[in-house]
Length: 382
Image 1 (cartoon, rainbow, N blue to C red):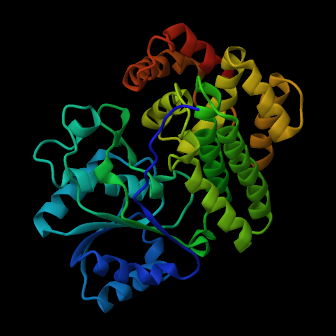
Image 2: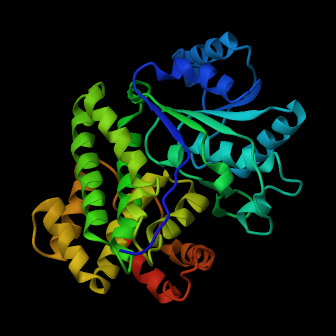
């Protein structure tokens, strides 16, 4: 096990009706005015918006709305939020929604205290020296953004999907009420499952050092996600399954599974970011296509871990059997495993590869993921 320092400053408030405490949490931190970020008007129709507004009013906290944040969030909305935050002189950002809303909120929080173009922070022309405090109420479990400092946003003009990471962009408090996730569609449930699995396996397979304890954590997360996904497809209101799914999602990317590991990279996300940047495919759906395709190419580089995966997750013997079993499970629950399911033609291979090559350089793995390698992986996905 490698040396490491683990610190996660985010407070998680988990459980039924916890969203009613958001005003109290904000007041404890001296917040008087927030930029309230959200996606569609669904939170208004289902009453969550009113619940939040009432909680804020109890503590004399005012708010400015920034709605309309979309899945695969884009810089245009971030710029809008940054301008609102500056003009309205808000004290904090409150995200009510899923990972896309929270990622946008993190970018807005950083951009509001940055004098230049917020995109500079994504392309490393600028540094995040401070950010407005971030609070959130989660309505969909997938990204793990509620307990980490990362945010991913697409620049729709350049078709670049890049990230920020800073000690200043950890949420102060994240509220997770699994009841609020019961209305998530089956499509987005299975996309979310693929995203959580991707977060779990990136380090599991690519790390040069991966202690058995960390492997067991990852395997527990994956098995929990697979088990609860199948339960929720049958009964979306099963609270126990919804709660375990949500907590597994948080654990997959809060830093714990990577503690004591070394040498890991994020090739599945690196490749998928091109798909969602170019075609706006659902991120988790794109990952369920890329993961088996990447595994088929990569497994000879870490045969012992792939054999372990097959045994521990599916009680099978070989890497090839484990890969096929995961792909079959994706097909079983209904998340895509082929690019053609997104109507992406094979004739676009060169265009996708060019975009992925830029991502590979950005991720620092360009020497590994050459044009030939990327082409091989993408061909596995057609």
